[in-house]
Length: 357
Image 1: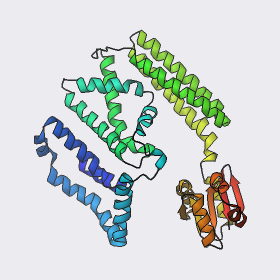
Image 2 (image 1 turned 135 degrees about the vertical axis):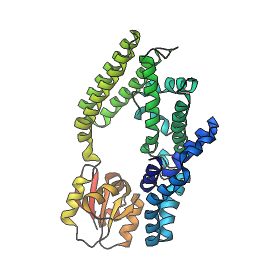
Image 3 (image 1 turned 30 degrees about the vertical axis):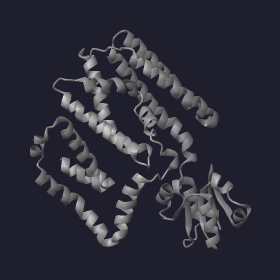
Image 4 (image 1 turned 90 degrees about the vertical axis):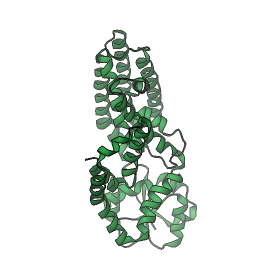
């Protein structure tokens, strides 16, 4: 199963499908000096399984596309993006610190003490806990070193840290964890909630349509924090646990039913794609701003040229007599009078524009 899923991961995301599990296992064996475990890993059979699943697609792609496939898929998407920042605003080394804190909320309030307790564990589960820590830290450090960073990159570390927090909570519920700082959970949670509620306040100022949903979230999070304080004071971690579970279930419901529908029109290309389908002549080139490209292509089936700035729009206008452009209001505002005069606004939805030259 290990080799099968490593191969499927390689098909899905490239060489890291093998690099990640291989590196994590190597570091674990290095830390524990249990090299004899290699004998139990059935490496010859594993190599065959991996090759049968992963290699055919790569061989076919290379046969069809040649060196371009290696240069683009392996070279650019795996090596260049690791060494060179594609998104300058997310290239800082600490980018994933707030991503992890918010993305793992509210269990972030327990993560620090769970990791500490797992590293100090000397019982039968010590090696398993060490493996989980190596898994989580490797993913976090690897992508922190990477020059290109996106919020979703560290998703592979969520399973091990969830298991660590679950183990820690389980021990507390069973009375096995001797907590030196019993109030660290509600204290850290309070700090996180204060930050999030403060962010909601500023969010309402910029996007008033979110006021109702964010107000509900604020009330739920404050109530959750109060529940955790009360339960910890009563030495009842089970009530704290279920308080967070219920609260975050409500939060997820509010996100899906209130907040996402309120902001979706400002981000989705669904409406502008529908307008495009009604006016497109079927032959003129189409230029699409990079963040809008995947959604627009999905809704229209038209794979236009990807552009990254208003400067790219200016160059495209100079090269073409007839073309269509899907850009945001900010890129349109940055165009000069000459370019705007050459473009006709065919449709506008929120901050997205469909232009025809």
